[in-house]
Length: 442
Ligand SMILES: Cc1cc2nc3c(=O)[nH]c(=O)nc-3n(C[C@H](O)[C@H](O)[C@H](O)COP(=O)(O)OP(=O)(O)OC[C@H]3O[C@@H](n4cnc5c(N)ncnc54)[C@H](O)[C@@H]3O)c2cc1C
Ligand SMILES: NC(=O)c1ccc[n+]([C@@H]2O[C@H](COP(=O)([O-])OP(=O)(O)OC[C@H]3O[C@@H](n4cnc5c(N)ncnc54)[C@H](OP(=O)(O)O)[C@@H]3O)[C@@H](O)[C@H]2O)c1
Ligand SMILES: *[C@@H]1O[C@H](CO)[C@@H](O)[C@H](O)[C@H]1NC(C)=O
Ligand SMILES: *[C@@H]1O[C@H](CO)[C@@H](O)[C@H](O)[C@H]1NC(C)=O
Image (cartoon, rainbow, N blue to C red; front, side):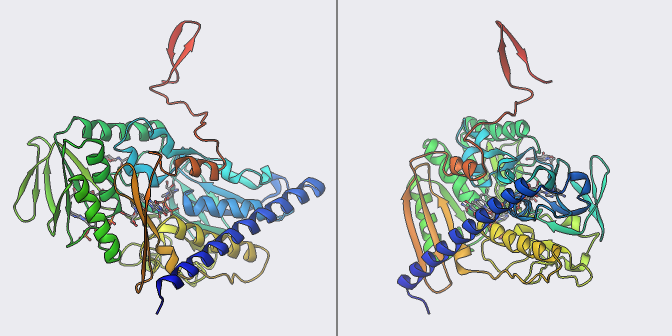
């Protein structure tokens, strides 16, 4: 059994291991870059073997970064990333930026910086969606192209059919920003806002909305006996107190069964009817594993996750060169998050580097209690960070000085200067041009 001091020491140890891991990759990338400069690198046309990565978010983008910057310059392998989104979607700030206006551009981080520094010939970036997978190739949705692979990484994450505030169900930045603004405007115009789902997304949206608009009625409906019920009691209580402090009405052990936008009402399973002129659904995330069903239906679990071995090869002995990591992979982690996705990504990348050089993939992912850490905002200026190992809990409260949370840090870590983006919003951007105002694009 662990006491709290032991938990603190363990957490610090975990942080040291994490920093060491990052340093190791950075040193290796520098070595590869120098070798490429002195001895040259395989030309793109001679890189005939593909490592295809499906999805470039926390998991897939990290795999791409590590492999592209670590492959020996004379390698015949190329990294092919297939990702439909124009930008990296920084999920952490979505609940906040669906409430607070004027920052939605910051949730969309330009791609590129995180894989910079790899020899140019190594990486092919394809903006498209994988429509289907076979044991030897992937087929793209828009172009119809079939790309053969030697190694495949499934990093398709989670999806929500209706999108925001949990996920952006639009591939282009301008459309994503437009949908975020629609939610902000909906909250601003409403008298009563009903938020469904007392997980992290629902608690964050409800507390932010009530903090920004103290005179509106904000109701949070959650099916279970406590909000944040998948975490320890200390976090459940902190979340409940955070909601009460601001005056959010919390309805527990009831479910929304119908929303009638025209009538402006929401009906609960108990029969209770609530007024509602802005409805925000914070439920319904599921693993995006549909694309795997044609490749290996038996590897898909009853929850829709892709079962994997400890090496993160998928649980299908016939497909040893196919890996899965991040939210889409079945894991014992109580709280799938970006940290888990990136730790798994590192294991996948190392295993593919081994296998590509003819060795056995021997790196394994083991769930760590520290993987369960979560930072939860409870209004515009405060948050709690929680960490539990099933026996002991640690929780820290903090004041948040910046409304944009960790957005600037995320841009920097992704190799982009906050918030510089060459991207132009197609429909809304106006450019001053010798006194004329013209619309860019269409
Ligand atoms: C609102 C919200 C807030 C969160 N806050 C935090 C937080 O503060 N800290 C934290 O650690 N975690 C947080 N998380 C969890 C974190 O976002 C996820 O664990 C993480 O995004 C998982 O990364 P992933 O790469 O596995 O998948 P995802 O982020 O889900 O990305 C999957 C990628 O695959 C692409 N894709 C899907 N299907 C295809 C296809 N067929 N072909 C090609 N590409 C495809 C998608 O476009 C997407 O880019 C939050 C989650 C949400 C919803
Ligand atoms: N700060 C952060 O780190 C952060 C922020 C947001 C999200 N995330 C992560 O993202 C993932 C998804 O989080 P989430 O908050 O979107 O989802 P979630 O954790 O699944 O929470 C949604 C909750 O809503 C309940 N629910 C579903 N339908 C309902 C209905 N009709 N009426 C009332 N309640 C209903 C669900 O309970 P039932 O099982 O009973 O249906 C579920 O507990 C999690 O891993 C989470 O940790 C992290
Ligand atoms: C919330 O959205 C999900 C999909 O995004 C949907 O399946 C679910 O029915 C919605 N729930 C409610 C209560 O509106
Ligand atoms: C995105 O979600 C909205 C509802 O929020 C829905 O109307 C729309 O069909 C979804 N779009 C896609 C492409 O899934």
